Length: 139
Image 1 (cartoon, helix red, strand yellow):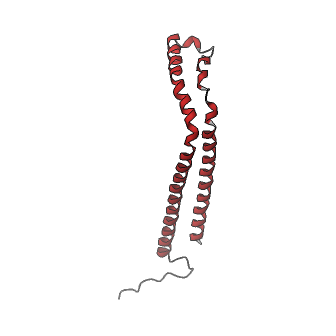
Image 2 (cartoon, one colour):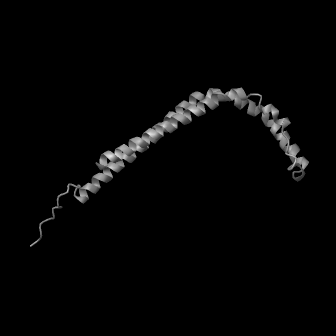
Image 3 (tube, helix red, strand yellow):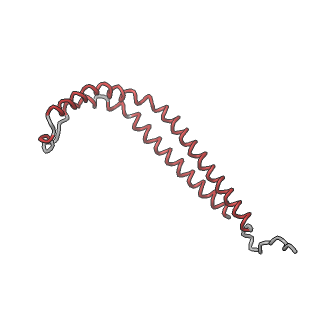
């Protein structure tokens, strides 16, 4: 009975693991495939400004330096946004590899539980309800 329960738990965890990886993959592929729609979003950096309550506390040289840095990074970010949809295929392979590694790990945990139960039954008499046979007394 313990064998069945342990494998039932392992299969339940495997089902949850599969569902989690599938959901993560679906959300990630959706996000990556729609990232191309964000091209042009990085060009809005010049419209960013500090909130009025924070402006007196930040030096204007620092604000100008950060703004110029962001303006320099805008073409790089644009290029990344345009390249992201091509990564969706690689994301599928990565998800499959991660799912496979997790599944193998869960099956190994199940095998370990199986061996642990077997060793416990061997030591404890197997739970058959009978008395444990003792070795004959040395005379």
